[in-house]
Amino acid sequence: MSVEDDDVIIVSAGSKPGRSFIKTLSMRDLPFAILVGSAQERKEMERLYTEPVIQVDFSEQAPEPPDFHVGQVFLFEESLPVCCKYIQICRLWTCKPIYVISERSKPRLIYRGLGATHVIYSRGSDCSFLL
Image (tube, rainbow, N blue to C red):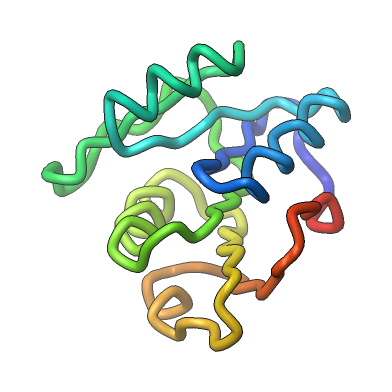
């Protein structure tokens, strides 16, 4: 994976594999921001990490983009509706690849239809292979 100097990776990391992926990004010194959908999740992520946290309002049609250049996006599936909304929002922010990482054995084609570039099945908590 190549990251341009001004690209910031976006990660939704409410799951164990997502949090493991954040640790990998930190260890590799790659710039990233964390995507959340609630105030409670935002507080938790801000308590655990120093990186920027982006809270999206699911009721907004087109949330304001972050004030940095969005690079690749890694969405760790928690639920179908949340993942779908994250894809729609992130696709507005970047033309770079969007990866959806799912623990479900049958990938959901809807993710590709909404703009995900890759839907990856993984049951392990170590997703460093994505980098």
